[in-house]
Image 1 (tube, rainbow, N blue to C red):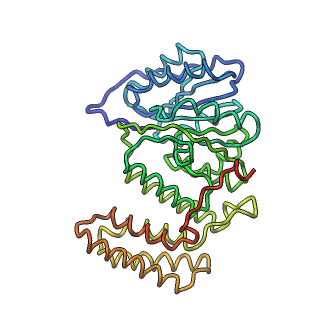
Image 2 (cartoon, helix red, strand yellow; image 1 turned 90 degrees about the horizontal axis):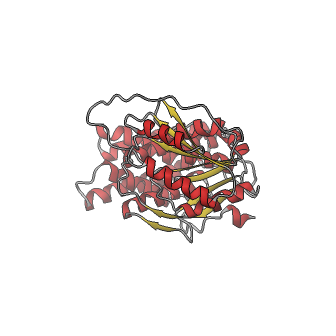
Amino acid sequence: MKHSRALSAPVTLPTPAPPPSTHHDEPVLDLAVPVFNEETDLEPSVRRLHAHLRETFPYPFRITVADNASTDATPLIAARLAGEFPEVEWIRLAEKGRGRALRAAWTRSRATVLAYLDVDMSTGLAALLPLVAPLLSGHSDLAIGTRLAPGARVVRGPKREVVSRCYNVLLRCTLSVRFSDAQCGFKAVRRDAAERLLPLVRDSGWFFDTELLVAAERAGLRIHEVPVDWVDDPDSRVALLSTALADLRGIARVGWAMALGALPAAGRERRSVTPVAVMALTHLLLYAAVRPANGAQVTNSLSLLACWTVAQAALGALPLPALAVRLVLTAGSLAALRHTVPAAGHRAELAVLAAAHLALAPGVWPLGRNRTESEAS
């Protein structure tokens, strides 16, 4: 889901109330489309999606437009589409957040399979039936589209490619996940599984997807992966830096919960997050917060020492030599960055610190191929 630019002047639009449901029989598939200020893309995307489902999906379906606090004409367009198509409904939320919109849409639905896709339709719709079929058959509990598995065809710029791959590597190294692509906007879940998982998910924004999948893996649920065709939306306005920092905070929160046993694994093969991984994530967050007021090396040393002290007190499993090695590597990485790129900013410093922590993560080199649920079976 992409976010539109803010309006140049406040606009007051009469927002109709969502109509009451006219469906007596619940659909098999309820497909949510979360939107925020999508007056340009909403109508053509919903019409295209509706036509595709009418032609290819053999069961009753519903498209739920989940409008989270749009300030443009999005709610008017959603209301008109809901009046035109019996299979289209819409809900309106007072606050922003993709996770909040999905939670609201899925909680109210009684469909067998709950799904969502981004309104920009970056993912090819040909993958929709393969996404849903394993859930209808009972073979799997969740299904995700993946841009990082063999068979996927992806068109996007190098910046987003690097960010996506680094994020998923970070998840594997810190939270021991097995799924390959956490944030592709193309997912489905059985309703009975969603009822188990949604109470465990705290995030209401972009980290919602990741937290849902981590909770599912820890609960021992089966996740099916579908390689997708995906074309990057050139008009996407997602703020990469703020989203990345929010994701780091989410990873740190979930990592602490796993380390302290608040999110236990269901199977013996699951590995809990290590104290070193938790310390690394917290170090990056502290560094980002403290760096503007201090030099790079001072900030690095103080934040790393603070993280080690907290981790040692809470978990009692991090030897002092591990701290020394990590301090030498991170300090050396910052010095090398300053020598090669004197004008490097704070984001570049965070990047080299993250790379230094990844270099010390056990089992990272080589990463090996992701073991999917289908291979395990």
